[in-house]
Image (tube, rainbow, N blue to C red; front, top):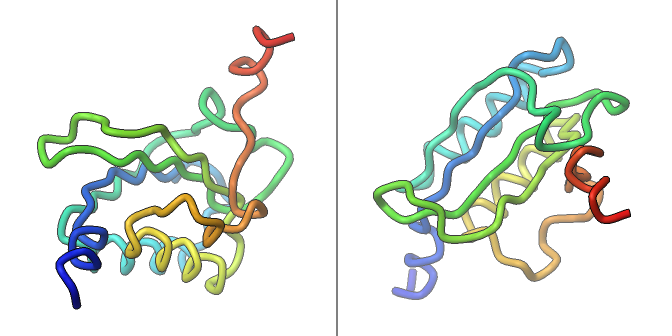
Length: 125
């Protein structure tokens, strides 16, 4: 592995996953846990509902938000809203994207990106 590849893989991030919904499938959660454990600087936090951050009410599956950060956990980039993540295969795609350093190159399909919560976009109208 080159230093560039290693640097991307070691990019610190915090993944916040909604564990409040009944729709949180354990196999999907386990896939995300494995992905985070494989990244030296990754942290996964389970929390209550993320409806203030992303639009999740009408779509069942695991919803999450991830943000790149520095080693001290201070944010270094924009939040990426994820979900719904419904299958193990989708969790594997998200995991590969996290391990690759969260590139903005289309490797994370739009179908796995959640929309912002309505209250976050209402001011744009």
